[in-house]
Length: 344
Ligand code: DOR
Ligand code: ZN
Image (cartoon, rainbow, N blue to C red; front, side, top):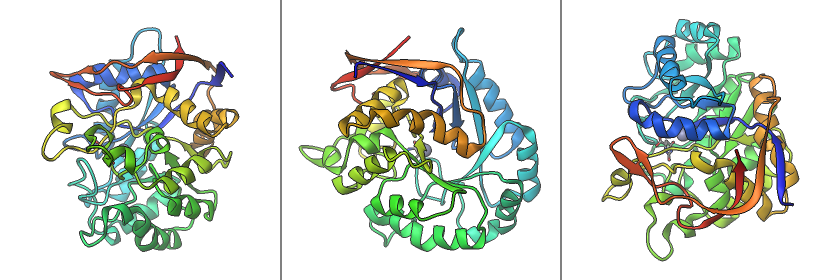
C-alpha cells in the first residue's frame, strides 16, 4: 500500500502547554487532527470551567488559517473539586472529561489526588452526569518498582474504583502493559484505553541499550518488548475499547538533556506517520482508520468526522528540532527517516 485515505482522526490525549509554546504545538496538532482532548496539567492546573474556557481561547488563537481544530477541554481533579464544578463542566459544552493524576505520578501532578476517598461525591456526580474520568494509571508508592506501577494501579486502585462506580465512564490513558490490555478487554463498554504511538514503536531497550536516550523517556515509562507487542495487538485488533491518544508531551531540550530530565515525548508533528508505521509493522494498516478515527468519537459520544486525510508512503526527514518558546524541542524520530507522510 502506498496511499492511505482516512477519515480525519482526532487525538484523545495531548499536552499543548501554554502561551508561546502554543505557537509550535497547536499548528502541529491541527495539521494532524480535527479535535483533541487537551490535558489540563498546566502550572497552575486548569481546575474549573472559567480557566478551561480561557485556555481554549488561547489555543484557538493559534490555529493556522485554513485549518479547523477543536480543543476538547478537561479539568484537573484536586482535593478542592466539588460536585457542582462537575455539573457546571458538563453543562458548559466545552469540557469533555476530568483528569485524575495521582499526586506525584508524573509531570505537574503535584496538585493531584492523594486520597480517592475524598473524591467520592465528585466521582458519584461524574457517574451521574456521564462525564468521562481520564486516568493516569500509576501508583506512586515508592516501594513499587517503576516498571510495575501501572499493573499495581489496576489491582489496587482501578478494580475497586470500578466496583464502586460501575457505570462511571473511564479512559485508562496511555496504557503500556499486557496487564492493562488484558484488563481493559475484560471490562464492560463504559471502560476504554488510549495507546500512544511511541509505546507502539519503542520498548525499554530503545530507551536504555547503548546509552540512555532522554528523548525516549516518558511516563508511564516504556516497558519490555512483550508489552509493546501486546499493545500493538490491542491497537490493531479492531476492538473499539482501544483508541488513539498521542500523549504528545513536549519539553525544552534543556529540560530533557539534564541530570534529572522531564518525562514526555513530543509526537504531535508527525503523529499519524508514527501510527501508520506501527500498524504497518504488523501488516494491519486496514485497522488504522477505526483506531484513529472511529473508536474515540464513538466512546466520547461525538460524531465521527466527515473530512479525510491522506498519508503517502514517502520517506521524509523530521527536523532535528522545532522552536519552543525561547528554546527548542527535539521531536520524536528526528534521528531516523520516516516512511509515511501526511499530504497537505
Ligand atoms: O511522559 C509524560 N509526560 N507523561 C505524563 O503523564 C505527563 C506528560 C507531561 O505533561 O509532560
Ligand atoms: Zn499525558
